[in-house]
View 1 (cartoon, helix red, strand yellow):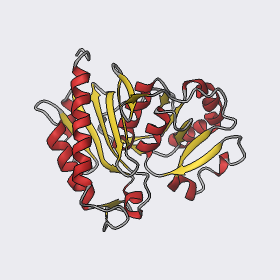
View 2 (tube, rainbow, N blue to C red; view 1 turned 30 degrees about the vertical axis):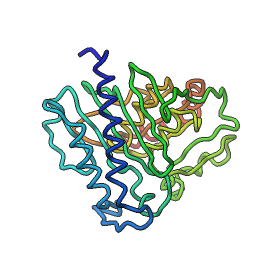
View 3 (cartoon, rainbow, N blue to C red; view 1 turned 120 degrees about the vertical axis):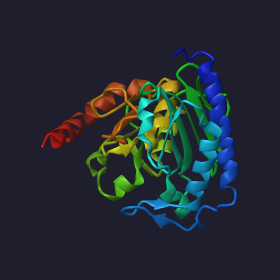
Length: 272
């Protein structure tokens, strides 16, 4: 399937869906929304459900698959060449707490590879949009990832939950600044736009958490990989990816070198 023009149409649809999601969110006030809880302590709100409905209405066409955190998984998506992977509200915990680190996240997958994506954070009025054919924009303007050549003095975005659990203590003595932040999709978007230098997680993430962010990082020309250093693959029967690394293109080798012992530990733990 050729992407020329095809992805321009897809990006227009993504932008329309993001704008519709912002409208759907207007009745809900971050920090004043009641949350229910799924299995464990994973929150969900009426805002998540309202945005999910609106995204599906705008995005989905005949012959395309759908995979969303807030929809029952229809495994017929595995038979589709083209699949939308969305998180209607990534960072619901922050949304409920009134912390402006949440977003609406949309990715388009073709034959297992992410080809286009869009993320909007209505709280900060930021929109990130991109595809492998058309490049990357931040609030409508072309943007580049960080061109920093060393991690010394870099800003690395970390999951706030992972920091609270102590998973980033191993990096506390390094020369970069660790900035805890909510939504993983928003972190990836900020790396794509050069607003941060790197982010990574050694903890499994759902495909809907990271698909759009991966699309944006790739569109911007930054580096992104799974923990085995392979390109992340999407629309799998299992929704979990083992973890993720993203950074400016010039930091790739240093980040991989820094994480190598931890990547080996993760690999060995899976074999046991």
